[in-house]
Image (cartoon, rainbow, N blue to C red; front, side):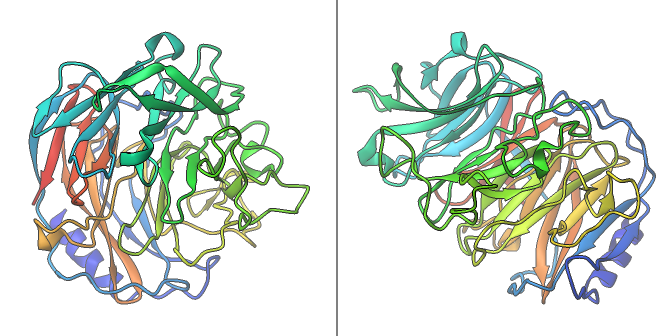
Length: 421
C-alpha cells in the first residue's frame, strides 16, 4: 500500500494536462473497503477495485506547499453532539464553534466546553432524518453587529428552506420566533438535498443544492437551467432583508433561459464546499452515483457559470450516456475516487491555521462510509492528493474555527475532533 502511494506521488509531480476535456490520471490499486453505505447517499452500491485521481493543471496557477512531507493526522475529541452535520464559526472574535444537530438544534462549543443550552431549537419545523434535516449554517460578514444568521433545513413538507434568525439579548441563544424565510425550494424526492450555506469573500450567500433526488437524476434537473436543483446558487441576502437580490455579476443575469440565482451547475449532491480563506478559491465535494466521488475546484478569478457535468458525467467518466458523452463546455474534477475506497464524499477545508506548518495549504476531505481522510495540495502547476489516514468515523462534516484550525465530526458517536498533525 505505502509503495503504491509513494510511486503515485512520484508520478503526480510529472503530470500536466492541456485541457478540461483531456485528463491524465494515475491509477492506484487500493482495495479492501467493506464498510456500511452512507445514509446521506444510498446509491453507492457498486464495488470497484481501483481509484483514479485526476489531476488538472490547465487553469491552475497554484503556489507550492511549504512542506514536501504529508502530515500525519491525530484527532483530539473536544465535545459530543448528537448527529452532527455542520461545524461553523461566527468570525465575531468570540472563538465559538457552532455545531448543527441534524434533528433541528444548534449547539455552541466555547472555551472547550459544550454549553448546556442550545443556541437554536427548531425541531418541530424540521423533517429528519436520512438526507433531510437541519443541514446548513452561515454567519454573514459583520455578524457581531448584525446579530442574525442563516440556516438551511428541510421543512415538514420535505422542501428546502433558507431562513434568517436573530439573537436574543443572550448572545448564546437565538430567538426561534424571529424566523424570516428567505427562499423555499421544492424537493421532489427525499434525498439529495444539498444543504451547505457559505458566505463567499464577495459577501454573497452561496447555497448548495442537490439534484432533487431519486437515482440518476431522472428529470435531468442538474442540467436544466430553469431549475435551482443540482446547482450552486449565489444570492445577495444582505442588501435588502425583505427580499433577496440577484448579484449583478451572476453569470446568467439577463439570460431568460437560466434562473439568475445560478452560480454553477451540473452537481449531483454537493456535500460541503468551502472557500480558501487565503486565495478565495472554491472547492466543492460532490457525492457520486454508483462508482465515483469527486472534488471540484473553482478559481477565485472565475466569473461563475461552470458546469461540473452531472448527469452527463460522474467524475471524469460518462454516465448518461454511458459512453461517448460530449464533454465540451464541462469542467471536470481535480480529484476523484471510486467505491472501493468509500461511497459518499465529505468536503472539508484548506488548512490556513498557524499551529501546524506542515499542514499549511493542505485541503482535507473524507468519506462518510469508509472513514478515510485525504489530503489535497498543489505541487508546482498541478494538484496532488493522497490518503492520509483511515478513521473509524462516519465523517459528515469538517469545520474551521476563527484561527483556521480544523475539526471533523463523527456522525455515529457525535464526537467533534480537533485535527492535529
